[in-house]
Image (tube, rainbow, N blue to C red):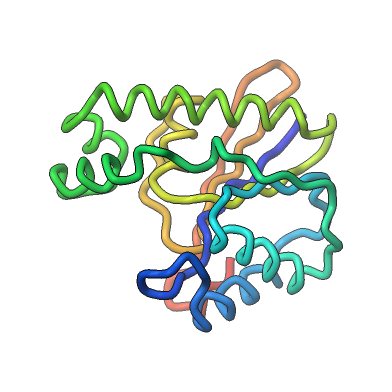
Length: 184
């Protein structure tokens, strides 16, 4: 069994690729609830994702384990994603797929392949943390499992477990409603 916890980055500064003060506090709050046993850390190339990981680890008390920046956790089609979500009136994967099945299908397959490659880098019995973006996390889960995950808010995520039999199991990691900065 192997597990990858995919989480969306914390709140960023408006118009910047950096966390806001609120985002840093949010990531630190969520980090206090995270396990301190990640065998690997994977992060998209965005600064806000790396900063989120840093605040998660700081608050959980875990030292930085083996880690890698993973370009495949980001998308060169970011503008298309925004345009499709706007046209669909939603960032749900199924709604966006109705608007542009080619783009959503191709990106979901690419992101699923990235996720499969990351599973190969997680030791047997190990757990990894990957921090990226919405709707890319949701698209990766959809491409890998066919399951639609509701759009993620900041610091929320999905745990994807690869069972010994080769099946995937998912568990959504939502922040409690009404919790200050979100307790998991």
